[in-house]
Length: 144
Image 1 (cartoon, rainbow, N blue to C red):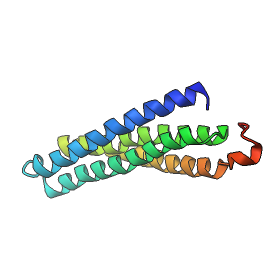
Image 2: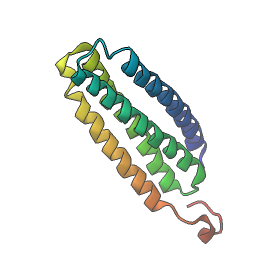
Image 3: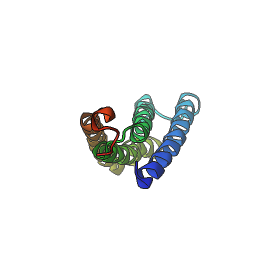
Image 4: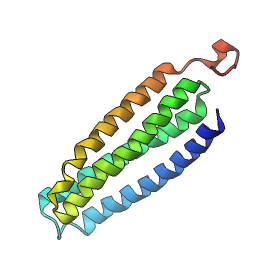
């Protein structure tokens, strides 16, 4: 594993941990603080943001762990790209849903699909990384 991917994996683990913390806090905030303030529709929009943030936070964490455990350079690169896509997806998708629900400003709506596309790209890169993984014993432990 190159130093770059080692540092990136640490950063992704920290980012995933903080994103998980934030998603749990926002979920509790939605359940207890926003119920009286938002319409059921906007509360649902907010909760959708929380759900997608949490699910893709777990995906981000898996990417970081896969980067650490594989020795195959092409897999590491794909997992790295997946992690970046998941981070951007969380910011765009969930962030725009939070902003839309809290402000009611409609122009946040068109940002949401961009986040969805980033999520899909992230899953694609995650699949590619898994596909490119090899059994390290077949190459006598030499990195490819």
